[in-house]
Picture 1 (tube, rainbow over the protein chains, first blue to last red):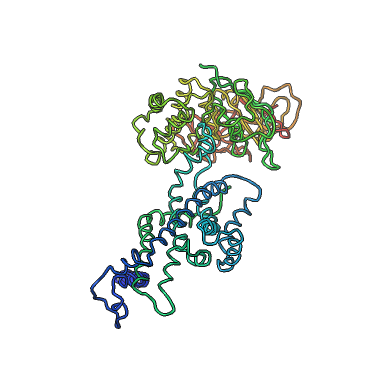
Picture 2 (picture 1 turned 90 degrees about the vertical axis):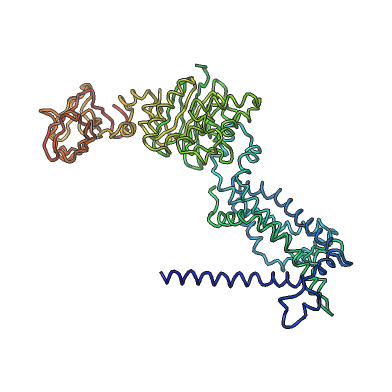
Length: 279
Length: 350
């Protein structure tokens, strides 16, 4: 009995350490975003202070407003997500169901693209985009994001489609449905969970992306992850503003996480347990 | 009887790579007939049903339904309804929506759909479950829902792929009887795939027995039971299975364990044969084959005996009123008309 209690206590303590380690940067950003410039630099750090929304006012409505960057991030993330899903759902269905020559290779290729280190391809991407004049454009960044979100989404969705018995489709054909109608009325409603998970992941990846954005964006299209960096300069770091932007940039992520938590947990276990394709 | 649902298979061959799943299958199914495709797994019966449904295409041969060549027609253009072994209900739809789906696909007017669904649900006694989702139904209810979805459209052909195999034994018997009544009252042609010979015997008007990609025999259950065409059919039909004993035919008698048993075939010259005797055909009498009773399996109204006839093992099904005790010695015999003779090489009936 005591051994069991001890074990439970140990699990709780370890979990708490992990939660604190994970919470600390978020808490740090949140607290600093409410401080004045003087309070931020105080040593030892102040835990009790008079909170102010000045930093938020500055970054949202000041001369260096990040509102356009938030808008850019939304356009890029939503654009990437919508196009990814429009292409990934039929592609995943095809990979899961249809028999065609080279299917096995196609499946491997999709996965292989996930294994490349992104830094290795950033220069070629830059050259390609410059060649077609798409540097610092929405279509340019979305195109590059598609190159990794699409394989990822297809790979994630395939296991959901494979979960649906083939007989279900055959029943629909015999009931008089065409292939497209079967996909729309019978298959897609059953993979709604998987589609939600994929949407969340693709959106978050695009929203959080920094490395490619910093190279491929410019003054016209600059997502918030890149804009944040402007608050760190050679002479000084504007800690309160940096913290305020961080919190604003994290907000949609956290909201989406809470909103989609149920789907994500369920989705991850489905993907994890499923093996390869049946056909 | 609507006179629809006349099926003809002509020389249907199906290759899976180099494997010949069907080796040239021919049969006719008459309108309003209950036709069973019976055979062990891998014998080609399910492939035959899938070709009939349009879910698979034959490698060669011709399929016609009501005189129309449908060999290369799509499943949805064939006016065929099917009940799958797994039922294949749409889990995100209610029972009502499941049953309505084929009508919706056939572009039936909204106002006509609800009464048709109600009617089909009433026929299979699930009209109180229409608002449920399939996941909230028991196995038997799911099975009925699948049936309702198949009958709602009044298709000319009604295909059933082992529809009872996921039900427990008691429910299976009940549903079996209801299925037969339903088919009769609808007057629809039914094609029924099963590996359970008892199901085929009780349900079918006629049946085709499949063995290794070929039809071994087509006939009424009574005909197939009484005169099996081959050793394989003989071994497959009947429970417990027919005793198959290698023996010598001499002067119209077969010699088993040194003792002669009279047959009806005095016309045949002496030769080696395989003798088939159903367990229920054995009688215990004052004379006949001497046998030792190794084991008695009491079934209540009868008993199955494991007998040792001088080294040849046979099983006999005996009425309850004269069961010999285990380890006793008895004489068994069978009437000449109950003794089947097969060629041990060609495996065909002689």
